[in-house]
Length: 327
Image: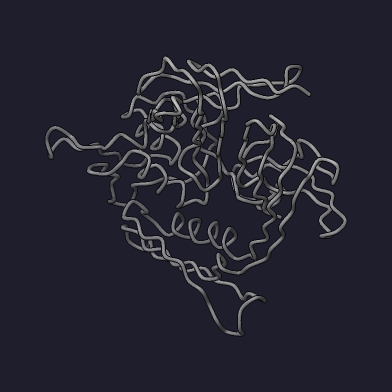
């Protein structure tokens, strides 16, 4: 199959990389080429794949341009649409005119804060989680737009990211295969988008760890009765031992919201992290936050897996994808 690439403002492409991850604030992309007409801040898209099967798998904005001499090449680095939220620091002209909201849903608050950075291409699920009640208020000032929105997502164990089309997504997207039976809002059972077999995989590393496990979640809110703790015995820790994580946010206004934060995050963290790293033939449908099926007899993997991280790379040797999976 003949490799295809079309990258905005770049000719004589030598290599291209696109990296996205569940745990990253934004997808990043870089291209090394012979000539470029791009400037800082320009929109850029990466259309890559094969001549008979290619797609735009990254769109964003140029953040850095580096020229190498005497090689006479350019390396362009870009980030996706979330970069506007990352770069926008919320600082009112007058300290008495801070952005303040009360009795507001999480999804509405995130949307309004994103709008401060000029981001209106926004899609979300309903959280049924109300903030700034019971005498508390959401006062947004002297903080980065992304940092504030991410803190709201963390309270309910949701995820915030920009998709390939540049739409900001605020959704119940756990870093593992979801079954749809958690009773949490937005929990939709995952469906595998494709199957990887030994014929399409070049290398596999499989590992299991309890490093991210937390079996005690403590929540401190700002309203009366808004402190709550949830815990559970873990078969992977010594008897009677608890690894704790704290969520402290004054905009949690009552017991119901504090309990939701504790319960949602206990379900998220009280589990082993089972990882698999796979190098596979390039496929434009592979992307972070999707689910694939992996069949590989040597390691005994034969199951659906969550694509936690995905790198697409095209260079003189061909097109490959490096995947970090959660099993």
